[in-house]
Length: 279
Image (cartoon, one colour):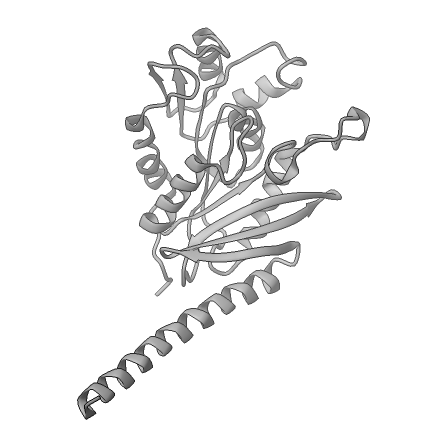
C-alpha cells in the first residue's frame, strides 16, 4: 500500500468513525431525553432506518399497559407538529399503511407520528375470553396520555396535533378529537352514525357534533359494512365549519391512492411546516 493510500484509508476511517460517533451520541441523547422527560414511558426498543427513528414504548394508564410507537426524525431538535394515527379493526399500530404514512411525514415534513394498539389488537391481543375480566375501553384517555407523554420529549414538544383514523380509527377517534383541544385537524372516515348503545356508546353522536376542527371525511361508495347514508349522516353531524366529504368508488378497504395523497398537504396546511432542528 502506498503512502497516499494509507493516508486516504486513515482519513476515510477517521471520517467514518466521526460520523458514527455523532450518530451514536444523538441516539443516546434521544434515549436520555425519553427517559428523563417522560418517566411514564417504558422504552421497549429503538431503531433507525433511512433517517427515521422508531421508538416502541409502553405507557401505564389507569393500571393498563398501552403499547405505542413514536416515529421521529433522526437527530431532530426542538418542537414539531405531531400526528396521531388510529388503526382499523383487525389491524395494529404498525400496520403497513400507517407505517408508510408515518415515514413519509417524518422523512419529508419532519413531523412526529404516534400510534397505539386498540383493545384486542397488536400487542394487546388476544382479549381474555371471560368478558368480565376484560379491561374497560378507555381509548380516549389512553390516547391523550400518549400524546402528553411524547410531547414531553425535547425533540417533539408541544406543537399542534393532528389525528388520522378511519373505520375503527374513527369509532375511537371521534371522542378523542372532541375532547382533546390540542388536536387542530383530523382525517376521519369509513364509519357512520348508528343507534347509540349498540355500535357506539351513548353520547358518541354528541361528541361528533362538538367537533369543530377542520376535517376531511372519506367514504367508499360500495362499502358493505355500512350504507352511504350512514356516512352522510355522520358527516352532517360534525360541527366543523371547514369540512369536506370525499366519496370514492369501491369497497371498505379500497381507498384510492389519489385520496391518500390529499392527507399530507391537509395536515401541513393546518399544522404548519416543521424544521429538523430549532436553529
